[in-house]
Amino acid sequence: MAGTTLAMKVKHVDRLITAKLFASPVGLLELCSGRVRLLLNSLASSETIVDERIPEARIRGYMGLGNPFSEHFLDDLQRELNIAIEQGIDVNTVKAGEVPISYSVRIKTNHHLFQHYVKALLQSNLDSFLKSLYNGEYKVYEFLLFRNLPIPEYCRGPQYPDYYSSKWHRDGGSITWEKIIVLLHDTEIQNGPTHIASKKETRQILRDGYIKRTDYGGANPLVSKLEQSEKNIMVGEKGYAYYFNPTLCMHRAGVPAEGCHRDSFMIIAEPAK
Image (cartoon, rainbow, N blue to C red; front, side):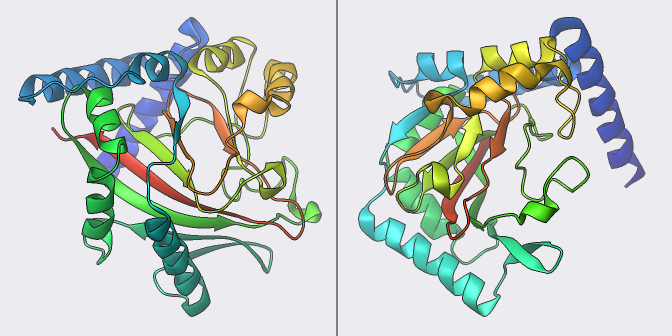
């Protein structure tokens, strides 16, 4: 535990210093470590898969991927999420005061649905996309089913917790993690879609003086501009998928309007080695 805490502190300091000096969203130490891991993963691969979407994905750090899954599989996902919420099985509930505002189901390797979801992933065109992205094999760290609901007005503002990552941030996980979000129903702005900044925009946010989730500092004007940009919002029809790097791209969960919600399926991948 002490070692883990020390590692987290070192990572935090590394990120702070590197952000100040180079406007980079990741620390210099973790960047070097991540690149070494990706190189080793690539060298261990026995095949090369080329996906034409990769150059744009690497430059921007996010992109739309179309509809990779069947209607039947999407309906299965929605059914599993509904059952988990209704029966309270393996579901994590986030509350603002006494009001439930988010439900999530983590599907890790020991979950009975994990292999079923892996099979669906391997049968989709996301498999070649991820292999090309990693220049080799990958593995799923976890799947996540979740529903976000409105946050009461009286629980918003900088003095309240970031209940379900609804404030601009970059993830604290590994730089080698990649995320794919699949919309489980038609999703518009009133459903509280994910807002995303490109790698370039993220670097500018840091240059402008972003401080933390509850204080955007001098980056407020750029963040406000991104909030209004349609190209920076993950909306679409049922089944549409988006890729993004959560460490290199600033992002936040939108807050659904009253009477609305957002159901999503997330895939978190990492190098196989």
